[in-house]
Length: 329
Image (cartoon, rainbow, N blue to C red):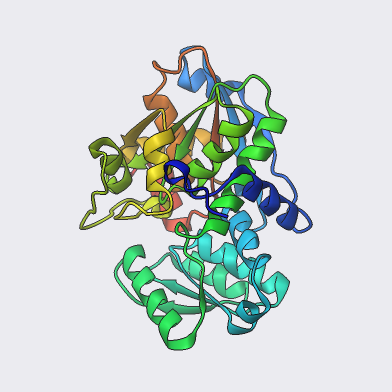
């Protein structure tokens, strides 16, 4: 499975196999062009939007969950799966577990988004609420692996997860011709590493840029420092990218393959949510707008290019949406 050349975690063939496994359960998501977004970004940029917010769980993590669950051994199916999450990854694992009859336990931090918690329970998962953030939820999941023998499904450090995320870009390049770049939000990096795995085989001329929230910049700062840099906190309303560390399965590939890496403020993310919702008439969560906010920041560098962004999810809770739309963020 692992391509150890230059620390790359997966191969293109791994993505091909993930796509084969998940295809019976998941329809391709659309990629659309909105002239209003071209105008909002300016600089002659053509913006193409990959609508991962139209998946059954309203997020790209449905791919990752299915990629993991469909690859389990018989023993792993019987033991069950545990996943740490702030919401979308857990929903993806729970959704896939429900489809395939696999017991799923989800670890979330205390005070996690109640609407995302409800969705995960709705997909049949058992929730364990413990810890102050995602990274502490990981520690809880690791404890359950030791105590109960569950199979860990980490949202980043799992080869099947990264391969599942790569299927986004496989679809995208079939849907859009003449693409010059992708600008991708990073929480742990599965989308970006999956994209680069596909592009370096099929479209090596397409550049990939990464974006993080200013309040959760661990991987951005690590990339610029050339080594992992951990943070004490990750504070952003875009909970899908609220991580405090770089990850061993994705950081080396991000370090090698990215064309650039920027951060965006809470206000820039909120403006991205408002702009995307107005243009696309679909629901957009904070993490789903981070790529667009990054594109706005990179518009001079990408002037005149055809650029793809990914609305990675639409699971924004009602109170956060109210604050965003009232310009309280």
